Amino acid sequence: MLLAAGAAALSTQLGGRAFAAASGSGPVLDHDTPVDLDGSEYVDLSNQAGVVAPLTTGTILVTFRTTSHNEAMTLFSASDPTAPSSNITLNLSGGALQFSVREKGAVLLNVMTRTRYDDGLSHTVAVTVNASGTKLHAGGRVVFETARHAFFAGVSGLTALALGRNTDSDHPGGEWFCTGTVERAAVWDRVLNESELVAQSPRPDLADLGRISTVLNSDTPATWVITGDSITHGAMHTNGWRSYPEHWTERVRWELGKPKNRDFVIDSGVSGATSAELVARFGERVTAFSPQIVSIMIGTNDIATTGLGPEAYRANLVSLVDSVRALPGSPVPVLQSPNPVDPAKWPGRVGLSRYAQVMGEVAAQRDAVFIDHYNDWLNGNGGQVPLSLLNDGLHPNERGHHRVVLKMIKDLRIFAADSPVCSLNIP
Image (cartoon, rainbow, N blue to C red; front, side, top):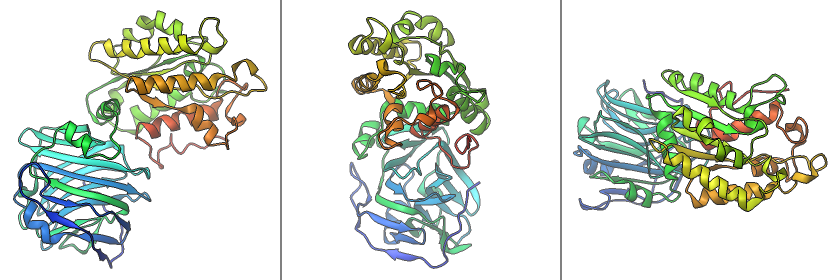
């Protein structure tokens, strides 16, 4: 079911440079003039509808940035304005990427991600369609795929083409208006491959982020291993509230709906663990669970352990990332930095910032996803350690664990303001 957003009845057509190109390697339609949309405006490209209407295969690509959260926002739409529900639309539904093809109310294709893209950041999304199926992409990476397929030629009478709204006989003034900036929209008469889509993305995603998104968007059960030390363990310092792995479990296994409840999230964090100990016990902490995703948060104990200075820590992290990828199925590693600590209570661990920096360097070197809690905590508190998030000056308390999972949820693109996990208020 397509979600509709209330929009102003009066809409304004905005100009911009859109041109049709010859069939071949380049786009057959390319609008590359950025336009700001306020939720009632749109870009009318109907004079180019005839260029795309015959296409049975190809690529639609849009680079955009949202400025608010609307329940439904059109990025690109071609429709028959004289008929009800006859359209091909690439849009955001509750922030999720949705592609739908309808012919006079009959749904030919309607697919949607669980990952979300209404976070105010610039994203380049695409849909590719051919006889093999339909794929949704973000930042040049596949995030969803299905064997079902339909494209422009599946809808008759396509004469309206727009960025920022959809229109049909039931909504002559438009519906699903977008609030944000559309930087570019383009259509090709062929399927672009990954390297081409990456090249078309001003801010391409890491391949591993695309793989994580694919797991989140897939109905195939997955196993997540979240490992580390006492912070991941969630020992004692949560004061009876959930730890961050438990919050993550609730967000994925319950709030994302069935069949994600068949995913498994395993917390193999052990109080007192170091990077060296995790390397030594990798088999029982990670391998034993046959994971698809492995999160590693480690380092808080390394700084207080003889022989585990920053360079030894670096070598261990490299070993852990490579060991994860060497497992059957090549699971995806995720590196999560330690949180900052109270320097007054833990003066011997003030240098933990260097360990967080090293983790970021290893992630960059190994093209791994890096979730930087250390700087997130400081940046959110004017550069000071937020003591209200700590139980003993070192371990996150219940509020700290929630802060950790919020960063994880946002970076892995499953944040929703109306989610009980995301909106949890801890007094």
